Image (cartoon, rainbow, N blue to C red; front, top):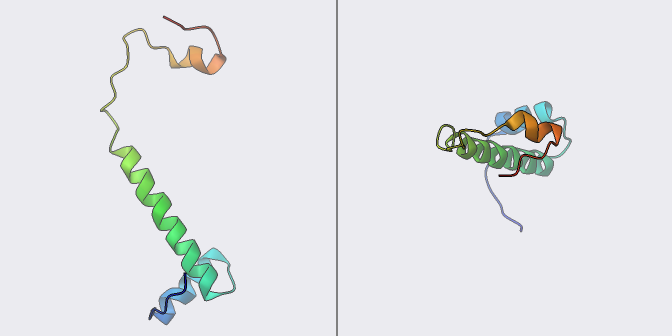
Length: 70
């Protein structure tokens, strides 16, 4: 999608430098991608402490591939 927007030149230069990209288009796409990833992570952190596990839940057994079926 083509869109014309006015972007702060110093901000776009910072993004281009940090992301090591050569075009403003790449910089904007990279910045948008990072924004979405960060927002998605914050939603995951909202779940912390809200999941109830069974008393006999053994995450180590799951990692090792042992049969832990009920």
